[in-house]
Image (cartoon, rainbow over all chains, first blue to last red; front, side):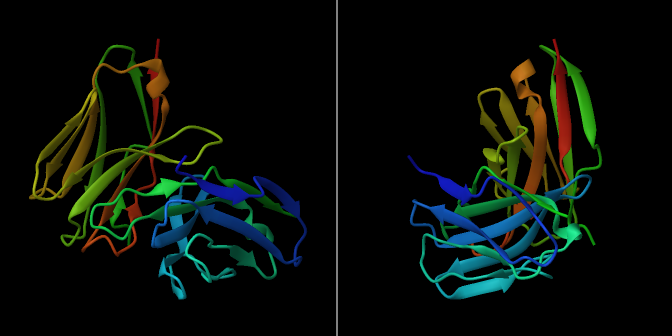
Length: 113
Length: 113
């Protein structure tokens, strides 16, 4: 089954404690991205990657890091989480073909206290 | 500056009637548009798309209309069903599929039985 998986699904942590949210896709997609969803703000892109070792900032990259060492994985790293990073996070992937639709993971609910 | 706007945060419709969700965009370079549907505790799922070379695309109960001169698109759901109750996101992109999707803030549709 074609899918995007994220782990963990729920995470409560404290300010400053480094964490990683993993994302993996099994569709051999070139393009992967991370979004955060906040009330009244919709989906905002954090980082995206057009292929292995190619990443770029989205609209709200501050406080986040990513890496793309393998095509299937695109982890999101919060080196020093802060309460304003409490949010719902989605990973997504799609083919690089024009008009390709994007597939989303199930989401990770992060709470930083 | 928000490039994709969904000006109605919410919409309520009676079961069996038509639901019309609207989306406006400002970037004339956008050439591909998508609608996503999101249920609580799930990731967004692709619903329907349209290329800028068309003005209408239909898939079952869902039809998307594109008015390029007005930079406006709309999603029509006929007839509306209670299971259609969800948040709907409009998204747009440019180029050959290698550019990020830009999302609107979403419209919450409630279909009342």
